[in-house]
Image (tube, rainbow over all chains, first blue to last red; front, side):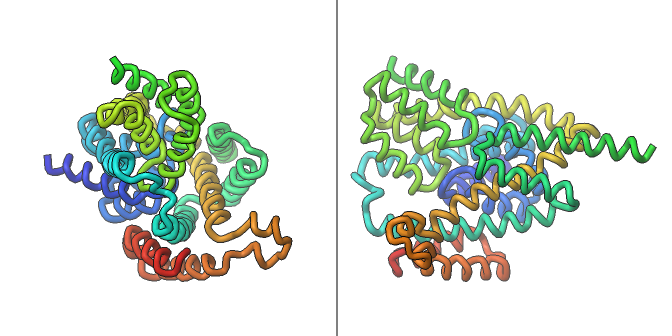
Length: 181
Length: 187
């Protein structure tokens, strides 16, 4: 029970401080899940994101479900998922019922102006870490660049990019094996 | 029963919106038109609120829409509806992932997928940086090249990046500090 509550609390904390969608929670996941608790490796988090991107639903929820399941099975996945959902749920209910035009208040806009910059800096920091971990050879650098350019400038679907990456990785590895023989 | 209908409609959104919170918006728009549950103005408001409050955007939108349709239980029905398909699908996939992620072919594929995902994350970072550190619109208006840089933001960004790299404190600390700085210095 203690571990289930911990799953709930950790993901509630992540949910409460994720501003701006799935990828913005990556620095928090990195800190809470990878560094502090070692519930998953950095590579695994990337895998969960890849899966989350290719399957329906909200990526943050998908990732929470995944880690909860890995820790404590189906019950664990329910605790982590409700954890990540609960803060949003409460905050939105309060705003929807009491505060009209919440987003128009100057104080909210200024706070969010600051938060956005923090989110940008935190994501850049996380990318540097992920790069050190997973980008080790030229083919990985090429895949990274193709992925970035194709999605930014040619509007390629991330799903297709992930599938292409998978094929490239499998192909490269089987060729390496064939060369060794 | 209205709650069942809300649950069902959001279940469908959770099942078909691939690629995160913002992907749900066209579906909500469609809902707004089919049921007269919310107006387009409310929808626009809702997106703005969902983006400026913490939490996954998809959850925020579901909770807000559910509340507008029929109060607290409406929001509960909508939120549970949108997460149910994810939970089921991810549980199935997680089961197979644990079983097969050590297979050679899967491992090889994953070594190609990871750099691609880091590319996706870089795209997200690029989008945030574009909005947070640059004034693209102001540049289009004035055509003065210097106007493209939001110097105030770039200074804070550089300082933050330096402190994050050096002190490695909890991200929450940097987020909270930036909110306070944002309010005090009117970012």
